[in-house]
Every structure is written in C-alpha cells, then in structure tokens.
Image (cartoon, rainbow, N blue to C red):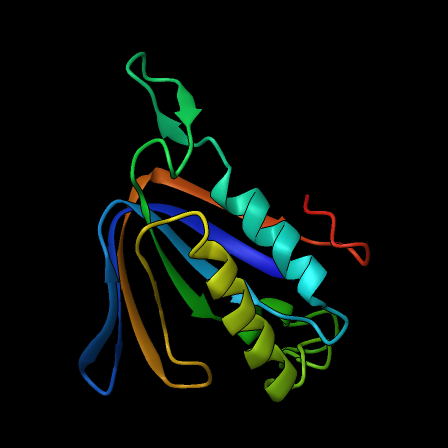
Length: 152
C-alpha cells in the first residue's frame, strides 16, 4: 500500500463537475493498493497516517496529530502510485491491485480512518476525478507499507 499524504487547509474532489467530497484543515490522502495488500496492511497504514504529528503547536513545532487539531480526511484512490517507469516511456501498472480487491481495501482503509477523524470524505473509486487542494506548508509525505504491513 502506498499513500501520498498532503497536509491541507482545504481539499475537494469532483466527478462530472459535482463535488462528492470536501474537507477543511486535515489530510488529503492519495491511496494506491497493490495486489499483495491486505486488511492488516490497511490497518497499519491508517494508524500510521492518522497519528502523524505534522501540525504545528503553539511554538511552531510539528508536534500535533490530526486528532489534536480536529482535522478532517479526504481519501482518493490512485492506482497510478504503482506505476513502474523503469522501461520505456509508458508506465506499467502490473503491480497495482486487481480493481475489485483494490476497491474493497480502499473502502476498508477509509472506514479505518473514520475511527480517527470526525469527518472522512472520499472520492469515487475508478472514476475520472478532479482534485483541488490548498497544500498547507507545503507539507507532503510518501508512505509505503512492506509485505508485513509495516509503514515507512
């Protein structure tokens, strides 16, 4: 499982011109699911992301978590995080999860995030989406779970 986590002051996702998910201060999470991922990997990824202390405290230090600031989450599926660009100029996506399994894990991950944040919105799996955000910082992290589900 791979995730790009962006600390945002606001973010939204549209499908066919209609806003289907919108948040204020919090995280925009672009989530990619691999064929080898499991619910245990999703549990660990959600736990790691939601407990990240990347919001500023009263001294300007990145010491506060999502819960500490009452942050919100927008999760958008992004199989292209598994693009392999080693050969040629056309990316290969063979390491991305089967759509049925990936959607199940995407929904499971989103549900796990709801245990950490009061408001969790999501995109539409497999849809052509338009994502807008105001990156706060900018502050962007990339996380990847290994075969044991350990995030780094």
